[in-house]
Amino acid sequence: MNNSELVEEYIGLATGADIENIIKLQKENLHHNLSEVEKSNGFLFLENTHEDLKKILCGDGVMVVCKNNNELLGYLFSINLDYAKSLHFFSKLIESLENIDYEGKNINEYKYCILGQVCVKKDFRGKGILEKLYTKIKEELVYLNYDIAVSEIAENNTRSISANLGKIGLKNIGHYTSNGVQWLIVVLDL
Image (cartoon, rainbow, N blue to C red):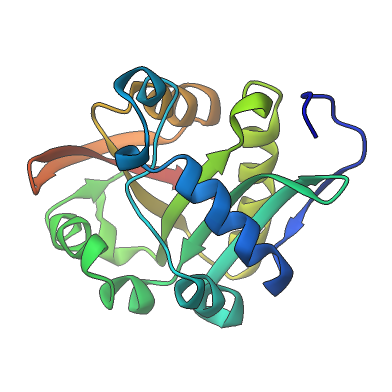
């Protein structure tokens, strides 16, 4: 689809049939695949493999997608804490959470998961897809009895910060540095 018209929109849980399209959309938005100008529209750091996404679908997390006539327009996933601990990418975030309080309690006193990544296809940004993805994942995470979801956003990813904190309402609760990148630690209330 070359235009940005929504014809038959679907927001729901991802299936194995979505994995290749998620990987394709992810690669189109990875920071190392974008020019500096393109990065101003948002970018991703985390590169997931087919196996990573399959593990999420098989119970280590929740993945929701938005499709338009079966074209993937966006995705959002979360992973459980045990799986996040097995991934090097999240080790500094999880370590940093040990010393962070949120609403009067240490983060570890909550049942929480890690928001792994959200991405909306460039031509469909600003059309409410991000909000719909978050609404759907919140429904799923509440059903799984999570209290909050925690994530990180690179401080130089201003579009993502604006969208996730401004539009969605995630709350900035701290920061840390890893491999020369400054990260905000954010919370999604469920």
